[in-house]
Length: 216
Ligand SMILES: C[S@@+](CC[C@H](N)C(=O)[O-])C[C@H]1O[C@@H](n2cnc3c(N)ncnc32)[C@H](O)[C@@H]1O
Image (tube, rainbow, N blue to C red; front, side, top):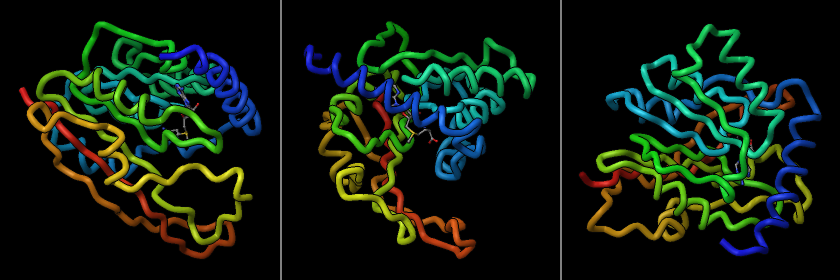
């Protein structure tokens, strides 16, 4: 990838470290329901969660038989994930964490499951390249799950310049640019879930779900 990304990498670390520094815990620590629904029927193997944050999904995977790896650009998020794993008594060999920018990271290992959940930010970054890099880590027969916010929830008020990109499933597939001979598309759809808005009222969130499998 080009030099330009090194500058973006620094901006990325700075942004996410500030984000995680704002409170002791940012995410719920609970597994995402879509991941649970789609992954539970799979035979556990090796997994990689890109942009794992504080590790909630990785810890669920590790507790459900996966050899799980979580990668995140934020050292603060990763140290929280490591602490959570210890707190839950999860064997360190079952849940491994890496603090790195995906742009700078590479591995010879391939994974039976690669997940990217809400890999979105209020600044420009080469998301399509990251998606394709994620797909390159999937082993033959393995799955890739890309889950994104597809729209702004009704209660959220964010200045226009801070809005992330909200990809549709079709845009995710276009960005992934998968070879149809090598990949099968299992799910490419919008899913709604109800959450509690800050005012205590129920609010609907719309997620873009793309779940694909590399053919054996
Ligand atoms: C919106 S958060 C989602 C966290 C988690 N996946 C979840 O669903 O709660 C996006 C995460 O991606 C991480 N991230 C952003 N850019 C990254 C990059 N270039 N390489 C690795 N992680 C990155 C951020 O630090 C952040 O934890």
